Length: 480
Image (cartoon, rainbow, N blue to C red; front, side, top):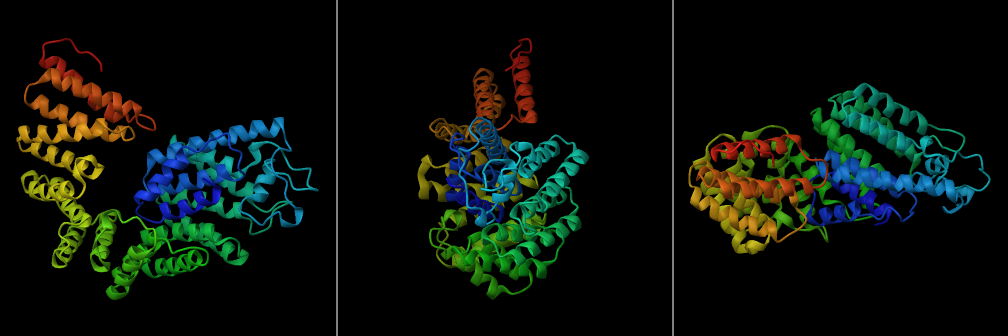
């Protein structure tokens, strides 16, 4: 991938639900070759990592940050060994692309006539911000805040920078993200409003400006300011449409904001525009229309706001619209049924959840067969539900089919582990302890192959399972 592709992908990922195509592009970014010395690639991957963090894609965020670190380390070594290997640029156009001045300050590129640039990565604001994120992830919040502020200060205008330098706005976005994650929304909003005002004045490339606007939208929505959110979304849409097709995620957020303000017909228009974007992967929206897709978007929005009752109501409305339009066998219908079943499960109503999961699985089995992840995922949910109501024979059949799918693919180790451990629980419930142990070992092995650090709570849960199984068989406790 080239850096601009990463920045564009960051705008889409940070702006809403992640499509299947964008997930594939994320996988490409995660496999970026660190030996390729492309200017701005580390910055682009870090921007993408930040968007993944906001979208809750923790594994992707961690992998992208580590890949960016490796690129930076290689760049640092390369700068020391062959300082003129990076491309030189004409001094009169030194601020024409995102981050050029910051890269010059770091010694990663050289502007003719500016030989006094430092040559160590320690001076790069991006590196300081990355160190701040590590401190934040380690729970050292006071130190992280100071580091984020240091990154902003390091990016402020200097001998080679202009007052509207891109790096300043990026670092303001980093500090604002820290405040947003800490629930300090007013402070985040002030920083982001400053950043977008700088972008308005500078008139630089619109992509990063749109990303900042969308970050500000998340903050003002969290504050409940729908009018401000709509204004920023419309500006982000205007910026994006100046150089590319409007991202579906921005159109979808506009649909949600309009609907929440009572403007349903306008909301339907935006949701239909999102569906009609050329090249937009259909995913669960396949076969749906503006009204049904709007209900799905509103259901997701209500769920994120913690309004379970509203989310269920919107899913029921989406299903009714689909059925009235002859789309009862669509991917969106299956998703609506799955969500309605999940709502029953969260209320402890396992028997009531079964019909929803059965209907959803039947639709996906007819649509996709048993070689697709959505079918296996529904088989897992139905299998868990069946085990909870004591129907272990049917649960085992479904989970074994799902496990066969998992064993035939090599990328979703976490999903593989989840299926194996739930099959273990079904077998344990039938007193088939040796078979259950084999599944637990399979789950542990797959979990340890998953991207990112192992989840200690999951590992402890599997170890507790080994302990129970050993005691049940009259053995001394052994570890997995």
